[in-house]
Image 1 (cartoon, one colour):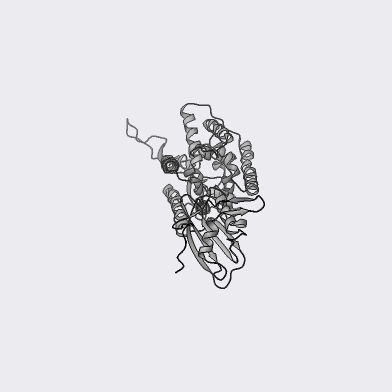
Image 2 (tube, rainbow, N blue to C red):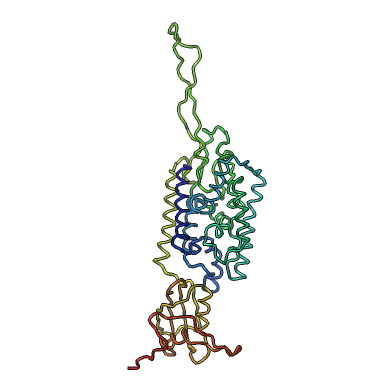
Length: 420
């Protein structure tokens, strides 16, 4: 079971590394915690935090769906930071680095820290309107192209995590990860889990010692702990030989039966199995965990492309009975800040002002970004919209002409339109 999980972890980590360093993709747009950070801002303002997109919401939905089915399996199979941390611990074992095993009570107390981290991160992010956690995020520091937006604090946290992971198993995941705090709220209602058959349990404690999340598997009838990552390490460690009495053996000298029966190993009957919580003793294979994770992930990615939800929305005025919509490809509309500036030019109050109703839906990103503008055709037209986007805007307070940074694909503002 461990080997299967290692293969899945390696594949997802390789996918992230190829995307970041090979394809120069913005993997922040596929971080499920980005959906948590942007939820309030998108709900109240209609736009995402800088560097994020609505794809964060889709992948968050996929991860939450998987959590309701197989608990926090995302953490045990797909999370790149969890993979790096766990592999570092295995390296520490091979190097015979002394391991630190935190007492259960201390472990439970430390695990509450992640809820405090979640509250602090969300409050500061919503107040600042930007990704505050990025400056301390070890995942962003370890898996990124190390640009100007990475602070030295992120490297300090990453170094501490690397050192701690050599002697502690999953310290960040167990105690500090804000996404784990969110997933715990859903994992409590997980439809699958590990169950213990007391009849076959020898109470050896191997399952509890193998559990990376320090769950006392050997003392519960069913693992309902929200922090279970469905790694199935406990199930793999469980099989216990079952003894039975064999018939008395014949005496090798006179052929008489021996006076005492012998004990023989009849096989193994594992006391632990993983399956649906509503069906006792029903066993599911590990590949089902992996299949559920893949289906939820691919479903989220596919839906994000089939349902193109804008990551920036701006609305002004009441919609009239009849409206028109124009779709434009805008250059240099790369992020939330640029999208706000784009809305600023459409809200201008000079010669090129756009009167009446206005609804803007945009998909900021590199290259040419798609923008849909809905307007009142009785008060303005498409040419006026293009002028508003591309013409300089005079700042009366500062007595300053602000040039427009935006270009419209296929449109030259210097060309005189054909009036015929």
